[in-house]
Amino acid sequence: EKEYDFILAEKKGKVALLTLNRPKALNALCNGIIQDLIDATTAIAADDTVGAIVLTGSTKAFAAGADIKEMKDKSFVQAFSSNMFAEWGHIARVTKPIVAAVNGYALGGGCELMMMADIVIAGENAKFGQPEITLGVIPGCGGTQRLVRAIGKSKAMELVLTGGMIDALQAERDGLVSKVVPAEKTVDVALEMATKIASYSLPVAAAAKETVNAAFELNLAEGLRFERRIFHSLFALQDQKEGMAAFVEKRKPTFTNT
Ligand code: CAA
Image (cartoon, rainbow, N blue to C red):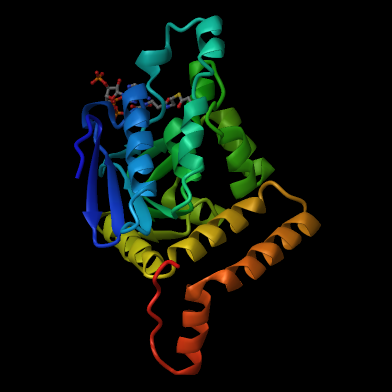
């Protein structure tokens, strides 16, 4: 297991647990933390023994946003020519399923990073928001786009324009998170869910993730066609034969990721 400066990376069975670990800054997402996440998820992509990822922070903060101190003095030219935050897109392109386990603040870039995950489990103490407007900017890592798709225009506009926060129960009602659990259980519930996902065929889970995500990019006819073509392609897998044979033979399938 590799050591990183700003995150902890552990293996829990077939699940990689990534913990944002910059507690003094409430996990503010500096360049180093994002680079660690990119390096860790790149290593996970190459590791056949990992089937899913849990991404978490601390009890007080999943992440309180992009690092304000790191960006505050940047000029327009520096922001533009470095294409600031474009590299975060790497996290959205990870093919293995990611379950975010969120306690405390998920604000600004923290909320945006969370929305790059596939499923969100929230602790009762979680708080979500896009406070960028209070800093004289707007969300820059997907907040104006993914939030609208997650919770609709009026609720997204309210968060982006007022800079206010919603709590975990509100986030569950709005569909931003899939479950709310007691804060001390958040990581365990996420690990349990990720372990279940990792027990299935890896290429099938990757296909499922890619196909659901296509719903955000394609119109319905194209999306349905994409789904059907991916569905057809899975009949090339041994795991499809095994899964269906096991059902008929009334036994548990043994998937081999082939
Ligand atoms: N960047 C840099 N440092 C941060 C930070 C951030 N986003 N959030 C918190 N910190 C630092 C604080 O500066 C403080 O450091 P010092 O001890 O050196 O002063 C430390 O973390 C603890 O924070 P607080 O003392 O503020 O803790 P609190 O409990 O009083 O308040 C909070 C918690 C309400 C989350 C508050 O820290 C806060 O409002 N943070 C900023 C939230 C924010 O505006 N996020 C959006 C950032 S911009 C962005 O994300 C752009 C984008 O779209 C990618």
